[in-house]
Amino acid sequence: MKKSRAAAPSSRAASLIERLRRENRELREWRRRLSLLLEYGKKISVKKELDSLLHLLVEESKRVLRADRSTVFLLDKQANELWARVASGDALIRVPANKGIVGEAVSTGNVIIIPDAYADRRFNPEVDRSTGYRTRNLLTAPMRNNRGEIIGAFQVLNKTRGNFDAEDAEILLIFAEQAATAVENAQLYDEVRAAARDSIFRLAAAAEYKDKDTRNHLERMSHYSAILAEEMGMPHNWVQNIQLASPMHDIGKLGVPDAILKKPGKLEPPERQEIMKHPEYGAEILKNSDNELIQMSERVARSHHEKWDGTGYPLGLKGEQIPIEGRIVALADVFDALTSRRCYKPAFSMQETLHIIREGSGKHFDPKCVDTFFRALPRLVKVMEDFMDEPTAENAETPKEAPLNGEPPLPSETPLPKIRLV
Ligand code: C2E
Ligand code: SIN
Ligand code: FE
Image (cartoon, rainbow, N blue to C red; front, side, top):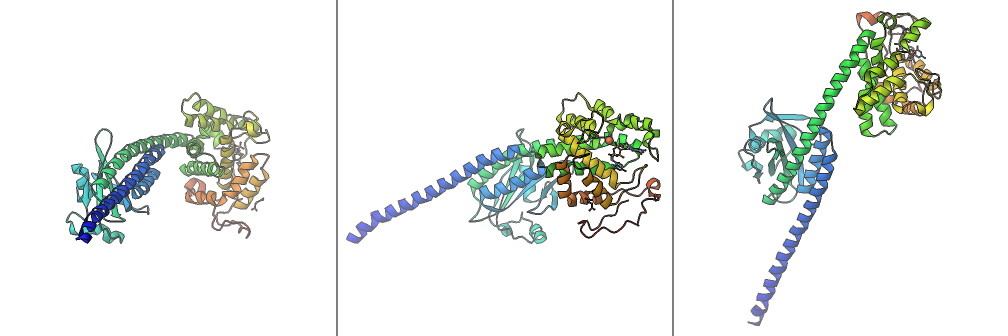
């Protein structure tokens, strides 16, 4: 009797304590999630590029929802397909937009909770079979932009403890909505950049066409300049700008007569005078833009033949008077001119090229750029190999000075195993 009277209140107390503990745990979990969600909102709003944004979305959603995997599917309206980068790899998967669980989330706008994947006939085990992954449970939410249109779906797999519940569904929905806005912004940004890149390369190619150089030359210039800028620690956005500004450095050659540009041999002094106008012609074409990228292109066009010691043209600027983008492109330009065949010169060997560049440090080139150049050499050489000029009828003819297959072997201290310059 005594015992049972004592037992009743204490078991009530125990269950009350148990309930309080549970509620406390739940509160703590909500607080964790809310603070992660707030952080997440800030983080994703600064990601401008789609690929890095998607990566961030995957990582953050795994953290907030305590899920083992996460996939962002984006709707490709034209193909009526959903595409995603799967797991950690870069592989792209594409699925029909109206099939499967993701398709259902996208077409109905519902959140779908599946506690046991293999017991649900909507689940397609093919995906597991192809990835070698074992899905236990999954939660899928549509991604709605702020106009209410569904642009994709967010899917998280395998909650680390237990199953996804209605609260997880709410969280994922909030998460997916914020993601939708960020994704749309990034897509827009990528499109604008792609359009700019396309126009720039076409414009620059018009000038190169006169000069009989190739698209590859522009690609190399673009990558060399970006690599140098990046290795010099310039900010990401600046690196992206120089990547697009550098191919326009010689746009002013549009104003130089073909007879001079294409002259097979050495230039007479008056011809040289004429060519030396191309930086100013280029700057003239690009001047007065409100756009920061075109403004950088103007500086590059005007200053890429200035020399560190003040003996360059058109202004004879010295040292840091020369804009840094001009100093970087000057080095990239000469590296490319030396390692390529031009109508007036053969391609030089890597050894000769490196010698000329090292000799030019503090004279033609900014010594900091030259140091960076040698540090970045393996990356530069990779670009050179990736964008090697195809031999054409015009340039295949072997110049006397540089036999195509007769490059002298590189000395062993040169860390460049497979270079073949055409
Ligand atoms: P480019 O062919 O793109 O060359 C760019 C820069 O690379 C040159 O600027 C120069 O600094 C460097 N470079 C090119 N070839 C050599 C070389 O054999 N040795 C050394 N040490 N550096 C070299 P530069 O001299 O102001 O020339 C500007 C542009 O004028 C050249 O652009 C090219 O289009 C034209 N050009 C220069 N020299 C000749 C030439 O003898 N004949 C013809 N037809 N065009 C020339
Ligand atoms: C240099 O001449 O300083 C470097 C060139 C080379 O070693 O190939
Ligand atoms: Fe030039």
